[in-house]
Length: 433
Image 1 (cartoon, rainbow, N blue to C red):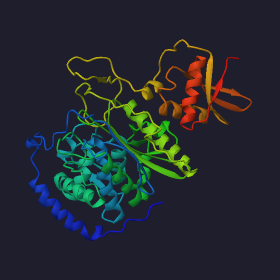
Image 2: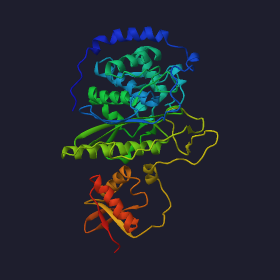
Image 3: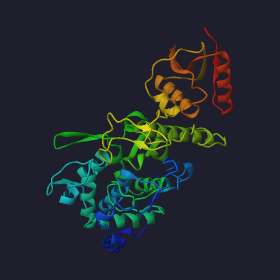
């Protein structure tokens, strides 16, 4: 799918490590790491996103794609890029061992939890980073490849610049909080495209849902691997400062899209936004192939999350979010009601509301219930305001599954269908039976 990137990397590795050693020696000590390197604009929403065509690199959608953001554990995609590079160049094998140093073992969660001196195979280490997002393993791998994490971080920055990541700087291999570690949605999309282009033989690691390590099953954090058809990677991330991040990719009808979502207020909001962007992107590409001139921005409901994310001061990284309650408010000292986007509202369980009428809008008839549900989800995601008062339902009869928005008044149904048709979404108004 991609043309193999030709470069003199194997020749320049030694030189790169030498430069990394120089920069690493100049890196601030942990005591000074708390001093901000770059203060992000507090008045600007954390949310940023981009969608690109993986094959051509064409940008299909972007919002604050060049604004600096904290990458959190999406950082590990670069750690894995350099890991795959070492494997492909023969400098390391999957059966080699990665030893846990005292410094690596002391990293904050999430972590695999090996004791200093213990080790795991490179294959296990890769799975620990992609599935568990293990911070201790990321540091151990950095030390294995470059001698120290600071040298490795400098090498990460150099490699990023070579790939075209002009607005990124790395100071650690894990993505744990450090105000000097900065990237952008565009740069992370460039990195995501590069890792699948340059090392397709290792890309399948990103689609692993879980793995068994020393008798224990380790489950991953990327819920879209289970819930979205064609979604096969890449990496989640979270810190208090960054919000909920995700670099993702999916394939439909032989076409691959890459999307990056940064600064989401919750895992559910982030995942729903990622799915909306990708599904809308595939729909736009299909319509373009038929000669239509349209964009993702013209077909998706945009609702910026605003205000700080409040949560208990627990694990930094990709820790399990079970029981986590996000309060999104303009005033952190006086929390108000949580603002929920229409996309998230549609995905959450809610008590049934009384229908306003008996009319319906049908948006398609399909050969399977799953396809009908997918159409309802796509329309709801793109036109949340239009169908906000309707209940999504699938009516099956005679081997056909009809995707409908029910419970509308006659005027509301006609208005909704008129709006959908104006956006080239086929629909029909159904009167009460």
